[in-house]
Amino acid sequence: MRTSLIFALFLSLLACKPALNQDITTEEIRDHLQVLASDSLKGRYPGTPEDQVLLQYIVDQYKAAGLRLLDGTGLQPFSMAMSIEAGPDNRVSAGSVNLVPDSEFRPMSFSASEDASGPLLFAGYGFQFRNDSMAWDDYAGTDPAGSWVMILRGTPPAGEDKSPYTNYSEARGKALLAQDLGAVGVLLVSPESLSPTDELDALTGRQHPLHIPVIQLTRTAAGKLLLQAGLDSIGVLEAKLNESASPHSARTGVQVRASADLIPRSVETGNTVAILEGADVVLKEEYVLLGAHHDHLGFGGPGSSSRTPDTVAVHYGADDNASGVTGILEIAEKMQGLHPRRSLVFATFGAEESGLVGSKFLAENPPVDLDEVQAMINLDMVGRLNADRQLQIGGLGTSPVFRELVDSVNATYGFNIKYANEGYGPSDHASFYAKDVPVLFVSTGAHPEYHTPADDLESVNLEGTREVLDFVSDLALALANRSDRIVFAEAGPKVSGSSRGRRGGITLGLMPDVTYDGSDGMPVMFVTEGKPAAVSGIQKGDVIVAIEGKSVGNVYDYMSRLGDLKEGQSVVVRVKRNGDPVDILVKL
Image (cartoon, rainbow, N blue to C red):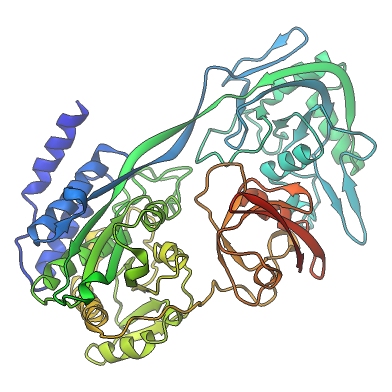
């Protein structure tokens, strides 16, 4: 059935294929966008039948342009975890009480898949806070080690004033603190103000798990466990906390036995890759890579990055990033007749919206020698050139030749260019900058329709897109024909001058690998020269596993740990370097 659906979709789009033409035209741009931003492709969500049709469409365009397809197929497949489902072994019991999965409890998406037993400890709001004038410690006078800790989500009410505890309200941060203190598991309960209907959160997103099970209970289910323990109802305990404006914890002798079982669901998707061999017998062994991401948000909805999460509808992504993919296809076709000296690699990336997954996969598994890639040009949202002819180009500082070269090419076009030197940015070029490849990021910028269903074909400036694509093709040709190698230079990532982070904490001046889904440490993709990480000796490729003796399993743990640090403090950061532990003293 799935194969038949893919074939039917492919046939329906086949009739829309634009004719081969080595000039970039508005007619061809429209033809591509009518396919890429169509209802038929349903928002180009990774791992769907429509995703497979999309990949085949792009590969067929490469083939029609006379390019050499990677491995003969033009496809670089990879799998990725896109969702999490509850497995069959989810259990919570205490005494004679056995709770019902899904209706009374559900594991949190960041829970470990583990089982544990221990006495029940009610620990209020489950955080520790102290400043010059006040303090709140739900664990004062009690040791949670070995216990299942029941915690209220949210924070105590703060009247009309902004709560000083807001930054401590995050459920994952509370569970991480309980883990640090030795708890064997966490039971989260929503206060009445947050969940008057007693509903459970849905499982969403990727896991990024802690090391202990974390389970959400309905208020009714929490009341059953508290009754077994001889404690007041959750409503009475909550009222005591709020009325006294001070912590209130209670240890019990009741044993909780619970298990969390989560199953990551992976999907198959991929990148597309094709190569145009250079005309110079020597320089053809060097490459200029042009790339754009081909995925989008599908139907959007809650849990997606849609800016209209309450609207479930096709998110066409005509500008983001059907325009960039169109650029790759049109430039590839045009370059065939220009005989560049260096070889050109054309790629489209899957799962960019999920955290640059496809481009990172390609950078880790390059189709050519990455040391010979002289430059990477990333096209992301190039379809909305405005009346002021504003064009954004990032990465100018990643090679000393870029600024002069861009200005030289722009002399023909007269774009009003907004320059940015930094090589890191929220798009696929960041994956290659992390590998010391000079990068250029070309975009016409954000707009109100970004990540909404209104980003459709009618909103694209076709003539402006044609000009931008001609400009990029001239820029790529100039890079491909340049006799000298293109030297890489570090430029960023940009770190705010105050270095203040979440919860008043510190940034170390490094770029974490946000795509890592496990719990064994946080890989470092890039270290900024002159910032605390670089000054102290943390290196690109290190994996941070602890800060001040507190474990770091992934980027979420890392950000929580930073929130507990203060400017001027010296801390020990433990990293794994080539598999070996190294302790590094970092002055903040």
